[in-house]
Image 1 (cartoon, helix red, strand yellow):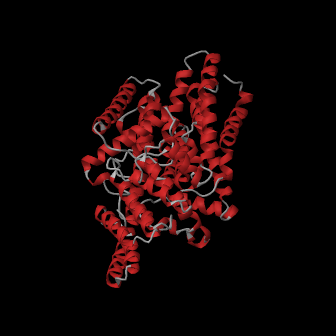
Image 2 (cartoon, one colour):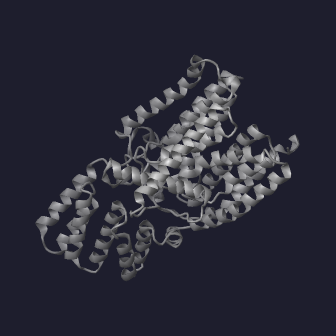
Length: 510
C-alpha cells in the first residue's frame, strides 16, 4: 500500500495519465454529428434559450432525424458552458471531455481504493479504465459521448455517497441528487439501480429487512420514474428507433451481434472503428445464439456470486448493468459503439483490482504494467484517429474493409473529391445482399446521388424508388426524386415528391 502522504499524488498521476494519453484529441475537428449538436444548433449560443433543453424535443440537436431520440438537458447545458468558454472552437469542447475523463478515472481509482486499498492493484485498475483504446471515442467524440462522460461522473459520485449514506442522511440525499443529474445527462444512467441493489446484498451491515432496503432504494426509483415520465412528456416515445431489420426476430439477432461486438471490444480492442454493421450468413443465427448464451451465463454467474457474497460480484454486476442499456432491448440508434463500453470498463477495472489484490504487490505492479503499457500506446493511437472525419473513415475501413458501414462512409469522401468511380465501388460494396437492410438503403441513396452527379437522372430515380420502398418513413429519397423529376422536365411529379418529402419531414421519427 502507498503511504498516506502519497495518496494525493496517486490521484494526480491518474489524472495526468488520462490527459497525456488523449492530449492529441485537443487538436481534433468536429466529427460525425458534432456540428448538428453544436455548430448548427442555435440553442447552444443563446443563454436565454438554454431552458429549452428541458422542455423542447428538438433543442439538443438541429438534425430533424434525431430531434426526438434523446432527452439529455444536462448534456445540452454542458455544450452551452463549453460555448461560453470558447465559442465554436472545438478545442474547448475537447478540453472539457479530457478533464471529465480524468475526473472519472480518479473516481475509478477511489472506487478501487475503497475495495482493495491504494496500491498497485488499485492504480492498475484506474490506469486500465483510463487508457483502454475504446475510451478514445468517449473522449474525442464530443456530441456522441459528452453524455456518457457526465453520466458516469454523476453515477460514480452517487454510488460513493451511497456507500457513506449510513454516516449521514445528507450523503444519501446527495447520492439521490447526483443520480438525478446522471439521468438528465443520459438515460442509461439507470444502470446504477442494480449496482446499488447488489451493493446492499453484498454488505452485511447494509442488509437488514426488505422494508429498510426499500426505504433506501425508493428515492432512486422515484427519480427514475419521474425521468421516464418527463422524457415521455417531452419526446413522446421510449425507443429511439423501430426494430432493426423491421421485425422482432431479426432485431434480436442483430442486437445480439452488436452485444457480442461490444464484448469483443472490451477484451480484444484490435479493430475499433466509428461504426459497426453486420453481414448476414449461414452462421448469423448461431453467433447470435452464442452471444445470448454468453450474457445469460454472465448474469447467472453474477447472481451466484452475490449469493456467496464474493468480492467479484459487484464488478461483474457493474459491467453487465453498464452494458444492458446498449444491447437494444429497447431499440437505440446504434448496434455497437466504443462509447457503450465506458461504464462497463469501470466494472472490468474493478475486477482487475480484485484479482491483482490477491497476489504480491510487485507481481501486481508487473502484471498491471503488462496490461496498461500496450493499451496506453493503442489508446493514444486511437485518439489520433479521431482528428477529423476523413481520418476516422479511412481508419475504419482499414480496420474492417469487409464492414459495409465503413465502406459506405469512406465512399462519401471520394464523392466529395470528384473520384466517382471509387465512390461507386464502395457504394456497391455496401449494397451487397448480405449487408444489413439499413446499410443497403443508405448505400442505394449514395449511388443515386452519384448518378445525379453524372446527370443520369432516370437511373437515379430508379434507385431512389427502391430506397423509398425499403423504408417509406424516410424523406430524403423523395426530396432527391423531386430534383430528378425537375431535371427530367416532369413538374407534376417533382411537386408531388416535394410534398411527400415535406410531409415525412414533419413527422416525428420513432
